[in-house]
Length: 228
Image 1: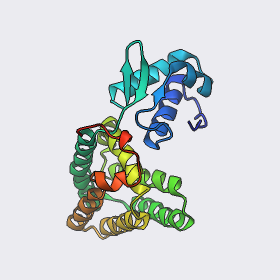
Image 2: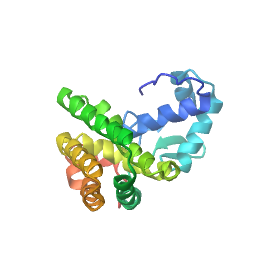
Image 3: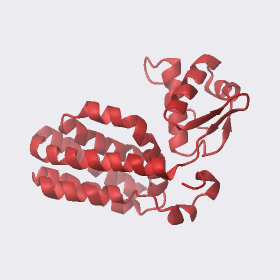
Image 4: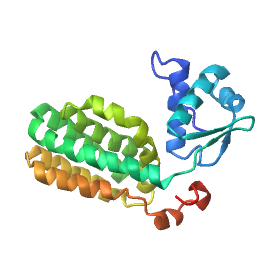
């Protein structure tokens, strides 16, 4: 498990939750792996209480399975949950990018373009973790431009399932295609072409539809829920 640096004024529960969530999404805690409060507490340097609270929250959003008297495990990837999360993102983000095309200020457009330029830089450097973070930031900026930040926050729990597969997809799909999508979307927003921006976003998000056959070429079958 990767131990993340603490943020300023971050309480123990939030730190444990953020660290565990990041490790689940990036497969450092792989699907199906067993976890215990004692081990996690020791690794994080925390008491069991904030770790237990973090695990309860992760169980609520179905990223952790809790088995009474038997401990806990990282939830297997459920195709239905992933597709539902992708559907939610597709509906919301296609609407948001249309709004962004009509609402973006020059300062906001510069911020969006700077994000894509940084993606292109880290793509050339082969730094996938930086690409992952900039990918998430790109979509967050669009929600901010559209004045829909609360909507973005409300989506967060559901899209965690999508994020886990998004990370797997970024590791198997040509990253240049993802970054190219972002450049095209940003250009459409800058050109105030709402219809084109929406169409490009729809194509972009379709890249993350679960292709089980493709993922199984790169990841163990045991990562996936049977029958999903």
